Amino acid sequence: MVESPFNDISYNKFLTEEKLMGSRCTKCGTLFVPPRPICTKCYAADMEWVEMKGKGELITFTVISVGPPFMIQEGYDRKHPYCTGVVELEEGVRVVARIEGFDNTKPESIKVGSPLIVDFIHRDTGEKRKTYLAFKPLESAEKRG
Amino acid sequence: MKRERKLGKGVCVIGAGMPKFGMFNDRDSKDLFAEAFKGCIGSVDKGIDPKDIDAVYVGNATNDFFVHQAHWGPIIADVIGHVPKPITRTEGACASSSQAFREACFAIASGFYDVVLAGGVEEMSKLSTEEATEGLAIFSFPDELKHGFTFPSLYGTRAVSYSEKYGAKWEDLWDLTIKSHNNAALNPKAQFNASIRDIMNTRIERAKAKGQPVPEWRDEKEALGDPSFNPLIAWPMHLFDCCPMSDGASAVLLASEEIAREFTDNPLHVIGLGQGSGTSLSLSEDLCSLEGVVYAAKEAYGMSGLGPEDVDFCEVHDCFSIAEVIATEDLGFFKRGEGYKAQKEGITARDGSKPINTSGGLKCKGHPVGATGTAQIYEIWKQLRGEAGERQIPNPNIRIAGTHNVGGHGGTCTFTLFERR
Image 1 (cartoon, helix red, strand yellow):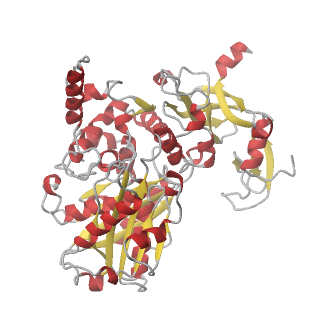
Image 2 (image 1 turned 90 degrees about the vertical axis):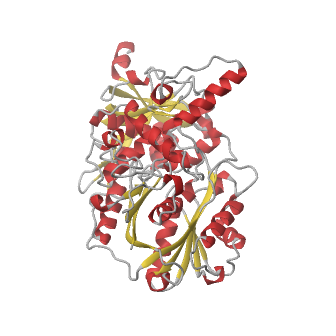
Image 3 (image 1 turned 60 degrees about the vertical axis):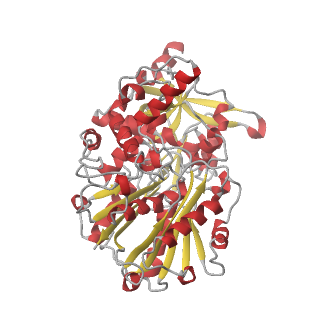
């Protein structure tokens, strides 16, 4: 883990292992998710890896009826829209992610501020394996758990 | 920004041209740019020999993706007979031709060239809606693209944030949509040269002709609220909140202020130039504002010595209805959270005190992305010279105009101010 470069490639690799990882500037303490090689606050270039707890709240969202081909291949269309959004983690940083577990046919029922917990969506296998960062309502996760 | 910006030498617009925007299967990018070029040369009051054009800057966002052909500079130079003189392609997503325009200004202001052409071209209609959706989504930040964000959805999230912060609902944006269509109905070069009422009537006639149930909308707002007329694209952006896929080109001719009057007695002076950049949704502190626009506006206002109250009218980047509201606030025309109310009160209508998007805007005029920036300047050119025909702003005293162009969802932002003297 220590040798991984602080970039999107490492971030995506950690996601496949169900780890949400960021980089923290060892000089000024600013946290970045996804990780960055250079601190854009103090311009220091000494980072350390930090694992996020995976809890946060919904800052904003949208529900998409007309998606790009790779989402259509997943089965999403006008009748089955998907939700994406911005989540603020407990650690104070924001990430973009897929949002699962809401009724996407009723976007007006999705509430900004909803508490969320991390989830990971895995697609394909072997070398093509790809993991998308997702969040789902904390409540439903606790009920099921 | 340490000091106020200024050009080393004054720059003027001395001509402008654009063909009608739309979706064309009988013309490609070369043909569209040739038409824009012809219109631009023909618009120079005292005439110009194309051989006197020193250099060309052409904006093109992503024909590489849309028509699988790259390196558009020489292709355009070839079609307008400019070879072997220099041409440079600029790419700033939907602000590509505003960047071309800025580079043209700098080239003249530096004293290197005297007469420069700036324009843009885009050909988007050859792909399916889904493929073109992906073609535009590549203008977002990598993490957004990966998670399935599309352009309507990037602005959709901003609309949700705006609604949360200021209480505006999707329905509050309908007045804006109706206004844009009313303007476009008077613009023969608009892709949707029709009011919402015109479109409703077409649907009613079609239903009658086919023997289908005839829609019974009482007014435009009832139609906009009907999902069969105005389906959801990305919450809360519905079809009529979104600009279309378009093919198109536009071109403007610039000359140094010293020689501009050799070409026309009625040039437009470039009095303010601003450009800023922006970051991803997750790093934007305020999702109800584009920080790059705020920066660009500060730069352009600073250079001109003017403020938002001095701008008589403006073409803003309304790729989505909410984008127009945010633009009018970022440019300082209205207070934060008040932009949508100004739209409702008719302040931004053609006969209002601050006309916005008299062309119909991107949403109705069309948005061939790389061509949009200089097409906005074409509208300013027509209006300030009193040549806008039926859509001419009724106030005869208009003198100062702005164009606001955004690439991505705020990644590249430009604001330019023009004056008729």
